[in-house]
Image (cartoon, rainbow, N blue to C red):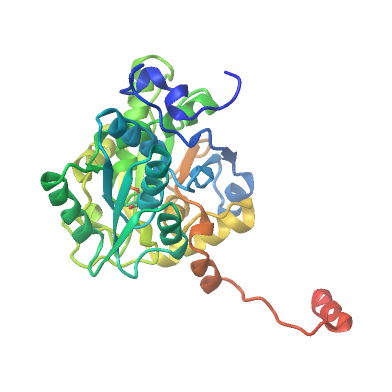
Length: 352
Ligand code: F0G
């Protein structure tokens, strides 16, 4: 193989590309699968936990896997502009890949509900950013309408190429473990990623690369849990802004993933999300964003409820990088202590 050239080159035979497809890549994928022994010990989980750290993708989230395929296909199809609605990560990724491809990018964001790091990414990569005085669902509704009126490519996960690219997350997990895990825990927002992972696992199973399928375990935030509740939420609320979505596009495929795999979809509170967010950082040295921690929060919840027998292999996808949202970290952690440049005072504090 030589060096890593992105998910399309690596998994070409599983993806809808051929020799005519121009490959637009930022060398996404190949992210670490971290063996989280400290976390397992801390939460009393008597099996093995692996964290798929998607925050190490080029724009800091799993969206890059889908975006390399969506943007490559948009270029192949002669598109000149792309558009998306986003809680932040999709827009960051779309803007970066559009920049690389020389396409225009338009992004519609819910005003005041996107972490600053993500907003700064969309801006610096050169996207046209529109802050909508509404929520993600309002923005996605408009994007889908605009896609019907103008010749722009929608690069939300309504675009099937996004799902195709994102399924490579499952391939990498299997390549690293030698088989599928027993359980795959994943945060759920617009529900594209759980759909994509399940597709990836099934495809690897069909070609005999793995001998079993995992149970898919999806996690929504309590104030933003339409799939769990069974009806759309008009005004979703959660600190995990990335998954603050009241009417997910891939609702049905997500339910199918859960039912076919024998998994479940459930909700965790903001408090549980923040506890997991802090534990992942303080026990494993991994800074993920709050929405990402919903997967681990779900694992903690089920561990407490004695859901597991012991000996299970569990993978949690950590979908995005914590540096995108430093404000939340600063809000929920101990604040720095200010002291004068006085050695005795500093020593006194350290020795406490
Ligand atoms: N985690 C993070 C960090 C996300 O940004 C998202 C979705 C999810 C989880 C949920 O994934 O939507 O496939 O179920 N972010 C989208 C965005 C909505 O616009 O960036 P999903």
